[in-house]
Length: 118
Length: 118
Image (cartoon, rainbow over all chains, first blue to last red; front, top):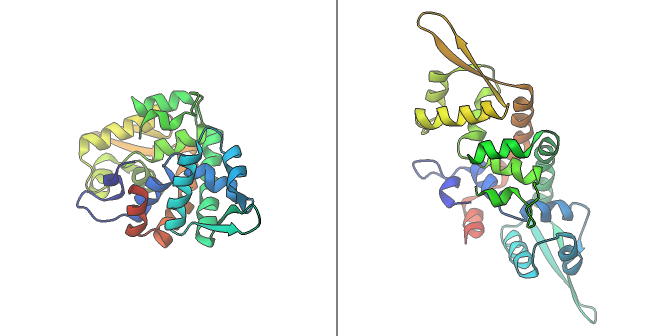
């Protein structure tokens, strides 16, 4: 989503629009949703979030880590592995998205999307 | 938001992603939010949804009407006027967005958005 979408016409920052820009990023809702069940190893997450390649997934997780929604843990076994976990605000965001996702599954049809895109 | 965002990699329709594409459209969340209080005349709505010109607002309302989220009523007084009102599913969508909007107001900061856009 374009950056102007997160700002009002006169350039002010709008937190609600910015949130929509964040969760409108491809894979972000899915990653948050998968992490709602608890911490996950990277490889496990990559297998579950189908269709997203490892590099994209790593980039998304890095961004989510930078903005404080996800924590990355390096587990120093041999071989070591990496786990990801939602922070408190990440968990709150994932939960805040559930009603919207539920509405979509109940009401959204592909014909409706065509009208929006048209 | 681009149409491919509403589809999975193999082109299947995803209702959750489609919902995010819908509410990611500029002015849509604001219009839904304003109509949560009840029916509104077009001119009143145009004055409240600041920064959105009349033509854009009319287009958005038309789309929302086409997909069954908003009802348009022509009030045949002299002079006549037009009112808009949420349908049941439109009201449910507006309410489903409230937790996400609340999360944004509480947690979203402009630095976070820069990271996402980066």
